[in-house]
Image 1: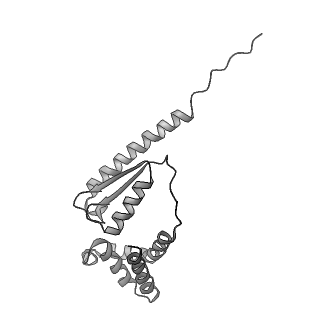
Image 2: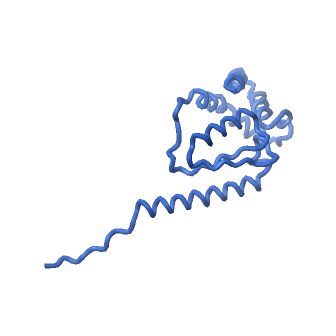
Image 3: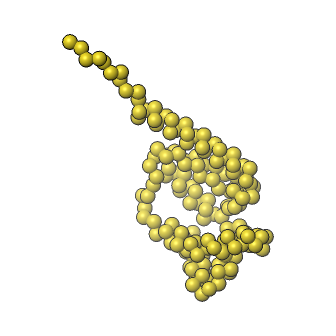
Length: 158
């Protein structure tokens, strides 16, 4: 799994360094969205991906070189969303994160691939609304536990 993602990172890095931004954007898009996905994008989306893709090799490098035992504080609510048919690399990363984060709420969007938030936007919006509800509830519970009402002041007396 590591070798495949690192090979993608290097291919993108070299294409970008050689001035082939369109090619790098297409490789990235087709890897995550499936072969031919790039061809389905309109010019506005293609331009957006081309503007962003130089950052992709840096993001992959950061992910691949992150130290072990890096985790979020246990009290932070996390909702991890993936598509049912996402790449095995992404599914494995999600499984690891879910196993290491005590307050993680995993969600799998049925019949979706890696781009599920775009292809299944309504279901994704429902999941995000549920996450916001759980996060607000957790915040209220934390505040209630940590910021109890102060004791009433007593008037000074004899």
